[in-house]
Length: 271
Image (tube, rainbow, N blue to C red; front, side, top):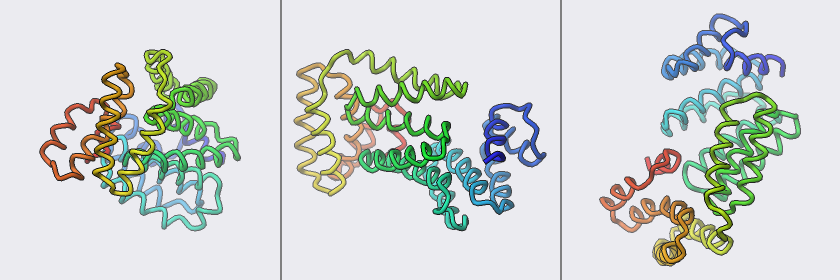
């Protein structure tokens, strides 16, 4: 969509010519004036009649709430999908919606569902040669694989994300991907294959509310990581600790354990 391509360029480049209203919204975005941006973007969203154009502005609204780590606001924006007629007939809109659903699953620590949604979003983006969408999907699939301790698969996604981001000269995701690749290098040749399968099982136990079994498996994995000195395994496991403690009725301990979560992506899952 030529209009969307122009907007994507204007979002990054203040010299790109666009209407005064859209220019003002992009200035607010670049200056991280989120409330002002959201007010302007909602007006623009409702003024568009093309479903792809509405999808683009809705995607920015949802993304702005994620940048603020505000899942309540995110949910309110997500409901606006119902105001985009025939969005399901557009591959571009299907990509954006699947990607946004993947982000929500990822924030909620539902990594299996996140993987399914990001994979579907990648399929839709590839089908319309939407490289920018492919970059986002590969990067977040890399995060899912990283958190699932499938480190070789994670590396493949981050490499692909970086290559495509460099092709687009999209510095933000190029740098993000490089940071993740450097982090994976620190793990060396550690074998997480057994822990990866058990971590997936831990997720399934939590989702099915089998919290006592989940606690026992958590303790088993924690002891193994400590004995083998697997820092990556310990870091990935600890993200489930606040959720488990809360489910088992240890509210104060749950909040205390959040202090150990340095990564904002992890912390958002509990607020």
